[in-house]
Image (cartoon, rainbow, N blue to C red; front, side):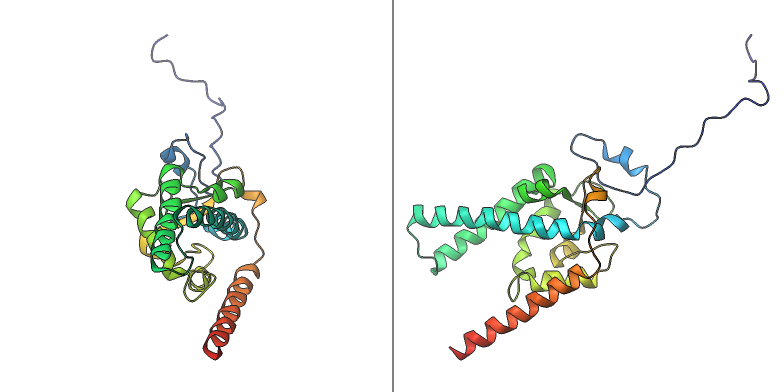
Length: 212
């Protein structure tokens, strides 16, 4: 019968329960995932802070890969490790390694291994220009040594963002891939402790170098 209404008392479907924001893996439509955002804060409040430990582990893994690649390139080109040509070559390789990988999937091999990903602060996939800028500024984050400036910036930008200088300028943030959130818990003392150690070691290296 046309125009019939459902009987009174019919159960209505339960509303969907949104869950804390996380970044979908490649192949999942980002706007659909963004529909699950609870908080008005544009970045992954828990994700950025929870991803600190895995982000540091990913940085170590990527550094080991780049170190091996640098040795191969220096051997193949015959350049001295302390030469200006070698420095420029390694800086370019470093930028290309991070930029090409993050434009392709939002992840370097290290980030993929530890379940984190680069996105825009609004949760959408980062634009290639953003990726290029954040990686061009790695040299600033590395000052004076051991990414000290970047670590201090991550600490100062707070738990909701955890952005190094390159992230702040580019408008990007590193968050967990969906399904890995519960595995990425980071103790609150970890980031300030690592930043303090990096700062102290940088100062010691500087003092040693000036006395030599």
